Image (tube, rainbow, N blue to C red; front, side, top):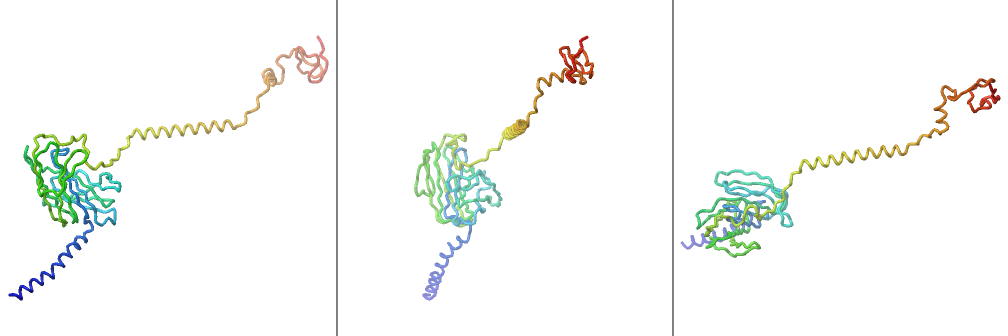
Length: 308
């Protein structure tokens, strides 16, 4: 009997280090393993449902951009899938694909360009009134080394409690109080649960949707108005016309101006018809050239005019 006991203890002592060593190695094999996972629960924040915010930090931020995945309840309403920039801001919302797994969860995949991604969805978990309760379950799509669940206490809520007991509490600049729960390392497909109870008779959410400041402040591209394109096209046409007119005016100013006909020549052309002066009163007796009334000598041959 002692020999069997000693053999059994030896086998346990031999296998235990191997099991302990293989667990982190198995986690490390998943390229989407998270070094940090933060799940925020905001019941009755800007809707009667619970706003769930998931922030994951990849343990291996190499090979970017790449696809990541999260599991959300199939009945939940997905709101945001994006990533976190280096300055803490959020990128525009990213397209996603959702695959219903048939077990109450859907697998949501999208692309992240950084080592931190962000997901938001609404889930109708709250039961009862005015004494309310909810049971939140998170199922991991990828392993995580460190897991924090932070539960926000709604405005005007009393008798607020969280199970398991929070490790710490904190407040923010907007006056919300939070209970922070810590969980050990989480394996893929493993679940954690947080139960919340409170009393709240006011049916209104903490924040009205119009003044909601929930993260992320996602940049959204504003569609360009067609009038902008019309204005731009009109301006270009006007500039083109001005350039063409200016070019022709410049060319015209460079052309030589034709010499003007002298007043004397202009008078002569106006008064001469077929080479004969219009005011001829007589003709030269020598050459027959026309003579004006004031001509004493022939302007052509110089013969003195014969007076009749």
